[in-house]
Length: 189
Image 1 (cartoon, rainbow, N blue to C red):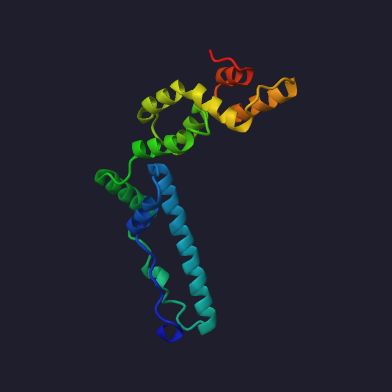
Image 2 (image 1 turned 90 degrees about the vertical axis):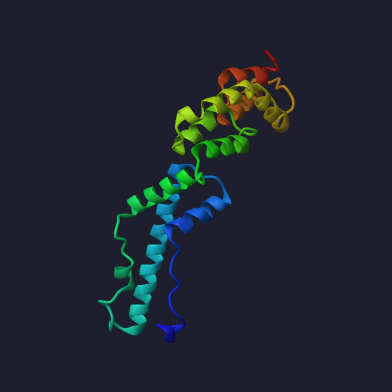
């Protein structure tokens, strides 16, 4: 193979992939596991395509001696991923609580409690870990909705059609109907 441009580059280990992903941003346990599965699946697909390409360019001389056969893991991929995730949690590198706090910080300016709560559930974060975060979000929901409304509209609508448009906008961002009604009609209490 060295005659054809060097030895194939080996794909990174699961731990290396997980560290690379976590170095970019926080992930929940569930989302990091899914990201690792996708990454490995893409790598295997590329490796198979590369091997097929090499076989066709070299002919079928070494069709029985595939590098892929040597790279088949001893344990199933899902078990390997679970072990990496457990190790990272034990070391404090992976934390659903930290992920939840980061998501709330990132999304609270533009979204209501309901939308953020849905995102946390989709990410697989246990609701017991988010109770306090969601409570503090609910306490500030009116102020956040009003600030978003001011940036987007800034004027209380006189026509019903415009009120409905403002209402739909805030409701789609996950703010409660009570808060949306108060903001759109200009009531502070």
